[in-house]
Amino acid sequence: MQDRQLSLSKIQIINEIKEKVSKIRENLGLNKTFFDIVDIKINGNILTIYTKNRTDKSTIIGPGGWVVGKLKEELKEFEIIKVEDITDYILFKERVKLIKSLFRDNEIIQDICKYFLYDEIPKNKKDIICLIHCQYDLYSLNILNTIFNVKVVIYDFPALVPNKSKEKILNFLKQKNVNYEILNLDLTKEEIKSLITKFPCGFLKNRIIESNLKGYIFTSCLNCNIFKYSNGIIINFFELFPMKMKKDKFYLNYCPLCIQSCKIKENKIKFIRKVVKEVYRGFKEPTDASEEINSIL
Image 1 (tube, rainbow, N blue to C red):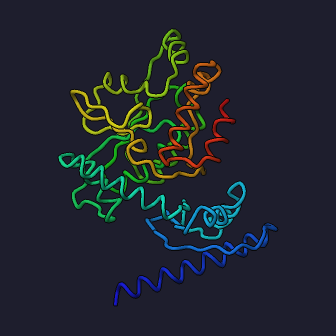
Image 2 (image 1 turned 135 degrees about the vertical axis):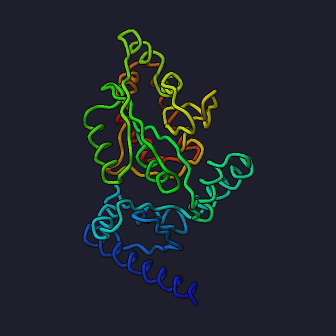
Image 3 (image 1 turned 90 degrees about the vertical axis):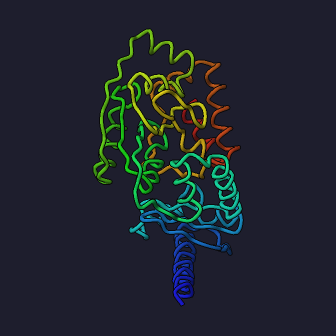
């Protein structure tokens, strides 16, 4: 009986979303198009809409994200609305199952896998550290904060975290009531020049080790899935679990070091390869990736 009521509730929400999307498209002067929604998932203030195919997905998102943007304005209870092709979702689930089987002895990764597969949240949450500096760090924090007791660490350096990004990060942390610590990051002119020349993405690994951070540390500034060292394990969350992400008000952009680095021809190539890899692995949409490359280069 309870399952049936849940099913009916989902159907009602799906029908409401379809009506709103159709009306929004009409008001924007877009073509009337038939589309289908096969499922939805509500996780706190995050709504995920699953479509039958990419055409339906594009219909709901709309040109430039206008339609889903207007939908978010109407569905004010959701801070994030994601639209996914159900095929991508199934492939992601299969990837999570594979990760779960490969990391049987890693309790932290097991907890993440159980959350994605079964919506299971541990009764006794484990402690982790999450570095917030770049791009989708706030999105990973939003997920990790549901599963673990998170302490945020921010390396305070304008060339890594500009004032606008720092303000956005701190506002987010206050809203979510997340504990944080700000650590000094001293870089000489020679070190900055070297990072820009060599391409800086991934350089925080050595700083984490030097700062004597212990346990499980999550950061996007890591050029691999996982890196183990004497005091802990560093994990690039979206490298390991590449979910489709859409830019919104929580997006932090790349750090100034990366942007400055891309003025060098060789680093432009490195940056393009990095973004293309993220598209290939299912983390970014091709259109978003193209816009990102154009904005940086």
